[in-house]
Image 1 (cartoon, one colour):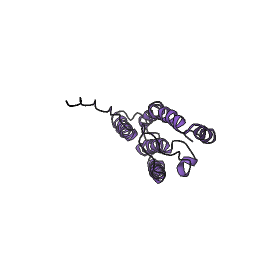
Image 2: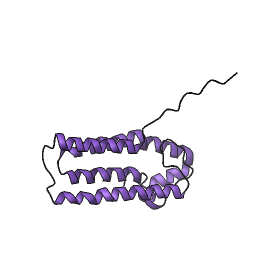
Image 3: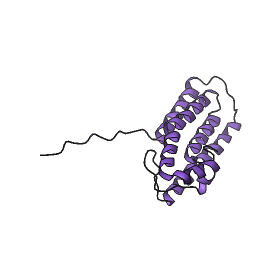
Image 4: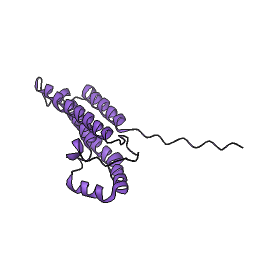
Amino acid sequence: MEAAPSAPAKRRALPPTYLLGAIIGMAALHLLFPLKRIVPWPWSMLGALPLLAGIALNLVADADLKKHGTTVKPFEESASLVTTGAYRVCRHPMYVGFVMILVGLGVLLGSATPFLVVPPFVALMGVAFVRVEERMMEARFGDAWRAYKAKVGRWI
């Protein structure tokens, strides 16, 4: 007698999917409802700085996790508590990098409406990922996590 097939694992959208959605939302708002230009050309080109810094921060944070042999994916158990590199400065550098990317894109676009996407994105990352990840880290690493959490800020 064959075993019944197991139920498929629940698939969750990962943070880069939400980042892509936010980028598309910002572009759509800029194109459809630009309202007011708040960053004129050529100053809008300064948006490349936070955008590139956000990409760099994500690459560095990803490398830090890989160097310690732990997962980058939310909802997967971490193999180690990473407190060095980008994680020495903030507990969630990849999400900070995502926000920097969005802010940079908003400046590049130059109109006010794309910035409307940033606060809901931050709130969504906080509720859907940061809180869950922090609960998992505390359950896995206990006092070491609590000591790290007392020294290093969640976002900055």
